Image (tube, rainbow, N blue to C red; front, side, top):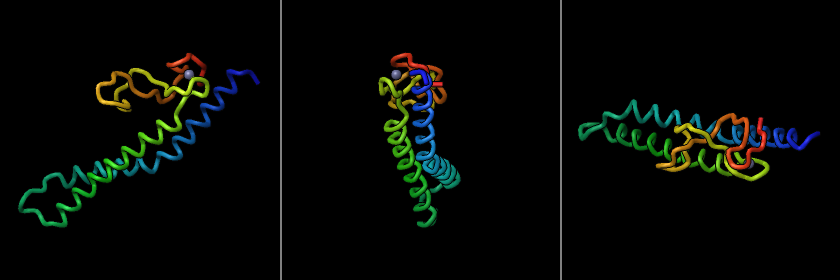
Length: 117
Ligand SMILES: [Zn+2]
């Protein structure tokens, strides 16, 4: 097997591990956002249960987001140079003000140019 194919297979494995570890947390983010939006109209006349539920969903979304970022940063890396493949997206940006996002299905590594798919 050529080095390129070994790299592609290893990156495919890393991407699958990342997805397997992150998918439940992504679902938790979605639930947290939906719950936060549905309960967003709390005010001083709202019941304590409703207020607590809105805080709970907001915290779930935040904790889950941090967990997904940790999982991606730990697993979704180039097998050659260990960089996270990046491209021009903004949704999965690793830091505020960074103008590149994480490439979901990259052809090549943005760090070293190694073939990844
Ligand atoms: Zn690389």
